[in-house]
Length: 188
Image 1 (cartoon, rainbow, N blue to C red):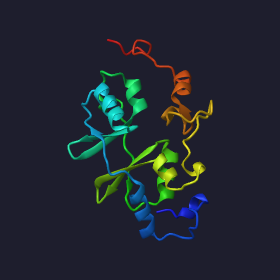
Image 2: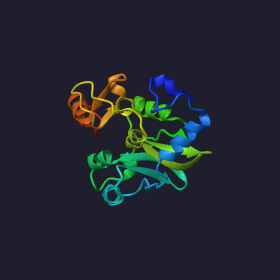
Image 3: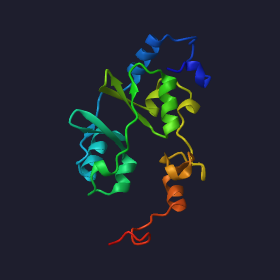
């Protein structure tokens, strides 16, 4: 586990936090209200649920297992009749004992805005950039990643074709236009 000093900031009045105190702080800011859908859920129904519940991220579960995370933008791009399992992202989870800095760094490195929280392998909560910001982290510690092309900070994603560069969905689509199966000779 990385220390709070790794990112070069401290909470106001904070010197050093023990691992126990850091864990309490992360547990204190996470939301225990989990809004879940199944991978076979219709995207339109999932989007309606997110709106009704006032959440931006839905946790996708299959039985008792977390299998994905879908944000409202993922749902919007997929279309209302698609299935959530077709547009969800593989979840990156942190342990409830993780510190603020570890959570913020994981979000920044993976260009994600939500981390499911596990305790003993069980899903117990979720923490977002907003939760960490409200907990007192400086804006730069939890800032959304920016697009390498246009500088926007909305819907920025990693793409394996970009060799680690981050691009917003608009710039990525311009750089890598969709190719139909007919264009690459895969049609039967």
